[in-house]
Image (cartoon, rainbow, N blue to C red; front, side, top):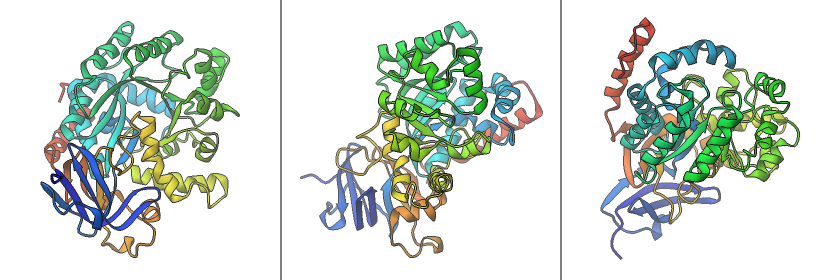
Length: 441
């Protein structure tokens, strides 16, 4: 048998829940895992060998929901309720500064941040998404890229009547174009999309066989507004439109009514919770244990860097696990391994990538990270999942591989010039702060 193209060895391997070897290895060819298991059963060599040097080898993390290009607005407006934050600060700034060039630049910044935090797959939802798709492809990050759909003029789609056409053009341009990029539709929310727009989005996704996702039941105010306008809760509104049967993932789901968790589970709608962002905006928290008990597929996302304000999924996992214990009063709620899996198999399912990412097993994509263990806060090691959820930091990530390609080595991004991108974003941010007219990137 020929040697594999890649071999990662020299450290403990946590390949997913229930799969642990004190000394393990992962081999891959063509970007696909051919071996994952104990070191003694691994190939002796490969075309390229990455030595873990005692570091923990594990699957790459999945950030199931973010708005990457909003890195431009990190710290722009904080300590505000969602409605004020959006209407008075974010929407006006986006109208002035967001275009395809700024989206590409700032998504590259977000991609670099995520790679250094061990994220190998992301679900991104925003506007001008040709720029985002190019950025993720250049960075070497696997991405479900959702073109935003909204019922008022938006960046890249100044005529609301053409928003669905813009989505169609984006999907047709990117379907099958890159092994890393999957296009989809992000219908912003029931409060910014009319029933006709939502039905149109569902029909488009059914026609083109792509994924549909939306923000749903994020705040108490949104729920009250939906009841006043449509006579139903946000979930009930989508159900009345026949949307839940076509919806792949709903983001937030903080203010669900009794029985709606079970309804989402029956309809096969994954829930992507963003507990840190929801907390910062004072919106509340999704009931993760209740959603899981109802049979929902649950994933975790950071939301955008303007509302979180980082893209650190490992931090999100830790916060979610602790929050579940506070919310239920039960220290056994959402144990470490289950919480961690929300950012692995849970994220994969929400993005339609089950069997591709979220595990280190033969046949899966070779998306993995190596964490440095030789540090005081990670000594000693009894339980890998416990360490990852309650002790580790994204800054412990040392090596990152996506689809068999090494994109981070010793905390240096290899796939693009991250320091150069940071310098360009700082220059752009200077113009944003000064209130000068946008001139692109």
